[in-house]
Amino acid sequence: MSYAGDLSPHDAWAKLEQGAILVDVRTEGEWAHIGIPDTKATENDPLFIQWNLAGGIPNTRFIEELTQQAPEADGTELVFLCRSGQRSIAAAIAATQAGYTSYNVLEGFEGEPDRYGERTVNGWKNRGLPTNLGNI
Image 1 (cartoon, one colour):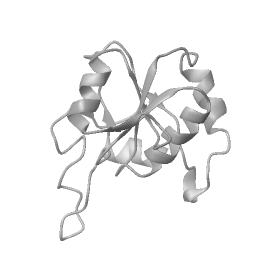
Image 2 (cartoon, helix red, strand yellow):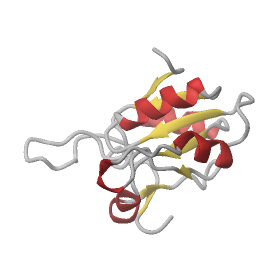
Image 3 (cartoon, rainbow, N blue to C red):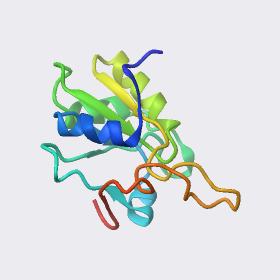
Image 4 (cartoon, rainbow, N blue to C red):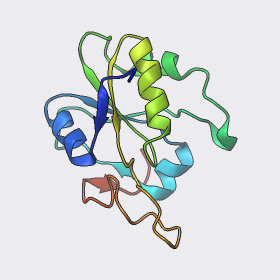
């Protein structure tokens, strides 16, 4: 594994309570229409940096944007979150290569689809972790 590890949504929340910073790598559309994690009960606000831009185009400025928003890679742990836990793996790998201690949230924000294609099985939102619907 080329990043610090995978965390369940509840383990990710515990990591945030210990001072880690959540980095949501979903798209602006996902943030606006599906919701965002609410971390106000922790010490740090989440960072919102798209891994892919509209149309699935890779964000070639991802690391640049991360280094502008995140503290220096000085031991602060970053916890990466996407819809299902796949884009966040790639983001965690890239951030690790840039010197950050990086984790991936398994199941993502929405989790896996059920047999009808609805994302109701698991994930941050479906496990009851704090969520807001609306603008970041």
